[in-house]
Image (tube, rainbow, N blue to C red; front, side, top):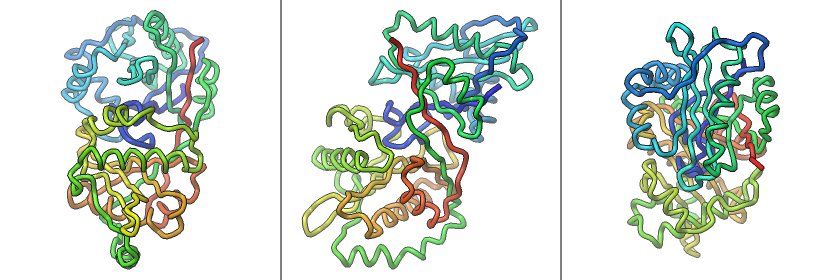
Amino acid sequence: MIGVTTSLSPRDGAGVHGSICKALGLYNSIELDGKIMSTVTLRPADPQRDFEQIAEWFSIMEDEPTSKSRLIEYYKKHIDRIIQKVAENEYGQLVGFCWIVRIRLKPESAAIHLFVKPEERGKGIGRQLYEDLVKATENTQLKQLHVNVSDICPACQSFAKQRGFVERRHEFKMMIDLVAFEEQLYDEVITKLKNEGFQFTSLEKLGDTEEARRKLYTLNITTDMETLGSSGKPAWDSFDEFQKRVCQSDWYKPSGQIVAIDSATGAWVAICAITRLDWHDHHANILFTGVLAPYRGRKLAQAVKVLALRYARDILKVNVVYTDNNAENLPMIAINRKLGYTMLPGTFSMEKVFE
């Protein structure tokens, strides 16, 4: 059995940048081809009957409590985008499930979520679930499937590759404990930057106006395309798409869009976006940090990150913050390490394109 971590990409409507924003926080496992086939029945999951068990699996794999009620709430809200099945053995017990969630503003793309109980792995259950749901999408005009695969599980990568998935990027998750965070060490850096003419503010303080959002959009697009390991393509095709996928999303917090402005020119030069998802009571996620190329090396990234961590502690009332890093973006990883982040296992983001 192989473990695969699959989540909706933030740019798929769940978050801004990076791969923090798990729409359900699911940890998914896809099974290796086994010689012993298990006799199971595949059927749609019933929320009242099955979601308590499924929520327990989510909670264990995500290491973040997910309740039956929250799962039902999410499912009802997005039911038109979800194709799902559970696997039930001859005794009526659930042994696995698979969900395919179509991306809200890109219905031709979807994320796949697949899990099989540890003691039932190696029996072909995962393969049956996968093949059944992929077949169910044949008449839906689906063109792409996305999955995040654990980077410490070669078998996971092999399973996905055998089914036509191709690696697109490698990311690491990092975590910081705000109780131990020594923020005073960075007061001098922030004061120095302010004295040099940089203003640190948020979209909320700027009124979250359309003008401010347009500047935020431009800053996001530019810094993201300049980031090491980036595809070099814009995350959104237009400002209108940015409005829908970011500013109108449930997770969007204007107060968590922290920016640095060069007072001499009025240019927006650095950003750190942070949020706390409604179903994550105990931690926040930094979604993206970026600095315009001409302003790098002046510790602006460090400054906006520190301000975001203070916001997480004081406003969002959490003690833990996560962030995702492209494995090729070594300078940003170094900044996170300096701040006190610890490295967690990473994932390979993989994609399957249907002909």
